[in-house]
Every structure is written in structure tokens, then in C-alpha cells.
Image (cartoon, rainbow, N blue to C red; front, top):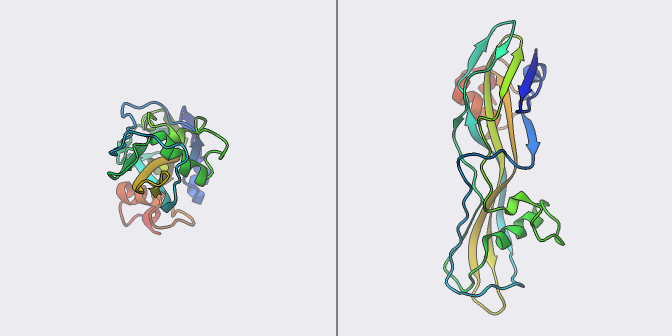
Length: 223
């Protein structure tokens, strides 16, 4: 079974039937109607250029952002027509507790971007979309997939989301705590409901998509 993707990358269905269920794409997601938002609140009116950001509770995980209803195609194949239903809209946000420093969200995001290797410590962060507080969420309706061969197929989309807490210190001022969230990868994939997904772990987007659309008793929904 083969697959053709128009504007949306996809694995060959032969790979899907073997248990390979996701394709990834680095960089920006296409522009969507939903616009990423950033918020930062604090009480002072100064910006500290030499502040420090100890980070903790850094969590990187793949999050299911959309899934389509399952659809069955015959041996001659067909173009998948089910649209993805949005489940989660990724956002780039920074929130501060009330404290002694009024910082910029982008400056705060640059620190975890360096921490996870999204940008270099000598970079000002402009080359990384991770720090872009005006970043648009990935478009879930950005192409079509054509499959050759029979099966009951589910399409899904996901992002690798990063969330981290920080404790910001500026000189002798009172430390400020906060949380930053962004994402580093957005991807899409499809699976075949009657085929178990190899080496799948609880919480992965493919398994969640199979349980939602194939049903909890389908072979693809078994961890």
C-alpha cells in the first residue's frame, strides 16, 4: 500500500501496516486562524538584562492536536476525506507571578530554548520559532492524503510541546517565578485500525488517536 500526500507529509502505508505511524516536520507550521498568544504580568517597570533563570519541571512531550474519524477504503485505494477535529491548540505563552521585574516574554523564552538546544547561547533567539510569541498554531487542514490499498485509516496531528517552570532573579530584587510553554516540532501521521502499533507507549499521540477513532478494542489501540 502506498500513499501520496499533497502539501502534507506522510509515511508509506506499507510502513503504517508495519507499525510506523508518524511523520514529522521541523520548523513552522502553516498559518492558522488561531493565533498564538503570549502573556506576561509583573509589577515593576524596569527590565533587567543580566537576570538569571534557573529552570525546573522541564517537560517535553508529544501532544495530540487533532484526529479524524476513521474511514475505510477498498483495495484500489482512495483519497482520505475526513477532516481533523481540533483537540488541542498549542500556544507560546509566558506567565509571571506578581514580582519585582517586568520582563519580556521573548526574553524569558530564550532561556529554555537554549536549555533544550533549540538555539545557541550566543544567539539572541530570533532564529528560533520557539521564542516567537506571535507564532501561529499549525494548520490541521493543510493538504490531502491519497492511499493505495485497503484499510480502515485514521489521520492525526501532534506537536512536541515544552513546558517549564522558572525562578527569575534580577540583581538584588525579589525572585519571580513563572511558567513558559511553546513547542519545537509539529507533525502528522496516519494508522490502520486493525494493525497493532509497534513499540508504542502510553500517552503517545498515535495510541490516543487509535483509541479515539478506532475504538478501545481495536488492535491499534492496544499498548
